[in-house]
Length: 621
Image (cartoon, rainbow, N blue to C red; front, side, top):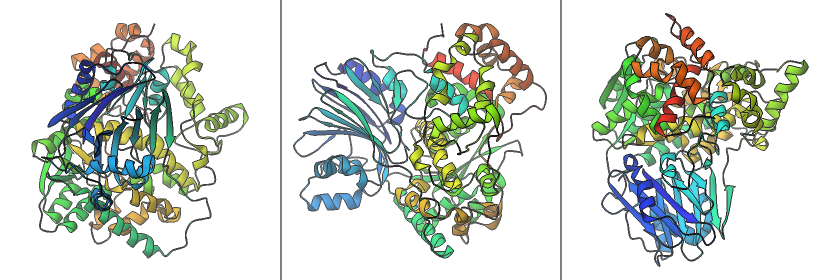
């Protein structure tokens, strides 16, 4: 895993200055502490920081093709690179590194942008064609690795993280109010939005081309479920056995590395199954495993973690996480996440990846994606039981239907909450000036999903699609996954998000994902014989940590300063009177925000304030 940066001129404008490019790239040292490189000409500049995983001693970037006309910088891994390399060498292509990503430049020579259809991996890359003076940016199918860009009057500027883009002198530092409203409305900002005005996120499954001074984005892949009633008729055993085989292959692919590979162990089904498959792939090995434990029995999963440790015998590392650790890690977490958050569990992820780094392990396997693919959240069970929201009648019901029609193109699709009613609740939190201007940045006025991919699908698959778009890609994989791992120079890999696994999962009938009230039924069947029954049978237990009520009760001075009345008023984004009411309510003994049914609004206010300071963003005036 690495970090990439760069800029390309639009028209006859000059390219990025070398000092600016170096400053952008230097912000990504944590993503690539091992080496760096750059390419610079009169039209374009590409910067690179390397975390050496494959081809440790012969894989520096930028990488070029045989005649030097193509220049590549890539963040990520291509898991089918060996097969692709053999195929390309048979066609006469010459490789100059041992890096897995070198296949990209030669595939481009053969297939152009269609090379993306040949890749199995997690990647974000920039490919510059010197002859045509064109640039291609691409993000992997699932959006595992981030890529951001901004259009200035003269250049397109890009980077693996927003902080790199902000180092360019022509990129404005300002808040995108719609991005902020998305944080309050959905699990987080939804690509292409960010909370930084003028800085966009390339979507998962999307590429961008800069040619002849024009910029266009194209979707090359999307999560595509069958129309309701058109599911394949196969035996239950076929679905279970094939899923197990595909997951085993996915794990085997993700163990490819020239450095130590370990895995996270949460105590739940997903990470336990990955752990079992790791050990089945190499029965004699003792990889490092990593878990976090809590003193609070209500959120601690160490009993189930130890069950897997006793079964498999890895070299296990348990990180004890206390409430005071949240306060200690919070500001660093926001700096890396580059967004306000509603939960504090990213601080636990920071501690986990630090333990990985300190053990000498550079790659860690983790279980994100299973809940979204196999119906693992509480909402899937509600859908299966027929408890979908009917949005009522009258004017309020009509307004809710219109909100849903705008968001995802279908007024009858329910996801998470009544958005019109929540719109009214959010208004109480905003400063008076923003309330007056709310219609200009209301997140409900902007589509966030492709309605054609929802229409006619089973309700469970509709929810899965929206979970991918609103929860997984730009939240769990980005600020929670990529950012918290790379903050400590660790690469996270996701076996459940292998493209072959995902394509197969879309074909599995909905009845096997939630079956007789049991979520992830087909995955649990696939885990039989690999994972102990107590873990398979336990209720879904989401990874979480104490929220802002716990922080208030600790009463650290800096938190009080960040939430001070005068500070909130001066910043001009949130209502200081409402913030004071929330502080009073949240500080009451025993008060907690419900982990599934509530939003920690005060944490959003707090972490947004941290964001303003960390990135030198202006007050609203």
